[in-house]
Image (cartoon, rainbow, N blue to C red; front, top):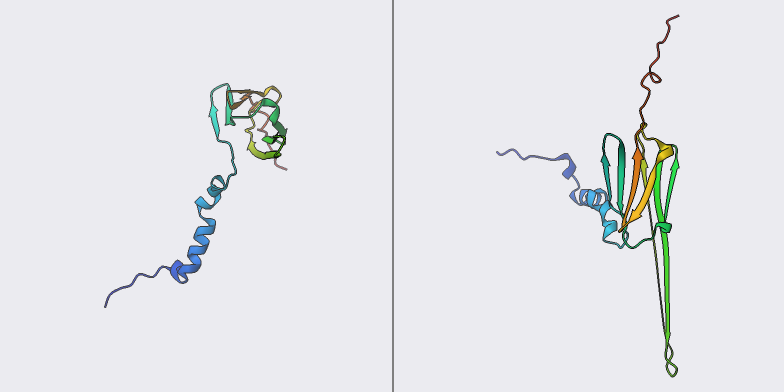
Length: 148
């Protein structure tokens, strides 16, 4: 007699395979294969500030919108391009191409970010956002509770 190991997740292996294919980590990254793009973001921290670098080549600085609401920084872009060519007198050839792209990324900011002095710049396909730190008054968050 031999002991057979039974895995409770293998009761319906076909069903598990469906769920694995649907909810595995690769499912959420398949958007990149389907033609959608989410720009890569590098986040770094120094003693004086945080810095976000967003890789978005081929844009203009007017394409971006940066919003701040409830300690959440949101970077978004929406671009529409349309190109039309018409050629020839005898045979009329018209070619019309258009494209549309958009993205939106949001970041919850730490409490020590000085929201009034955030700066952004766009150069060589990199959107750089500097988030300066401010000194938090540690006594504000500390208080003594009296016992009645």
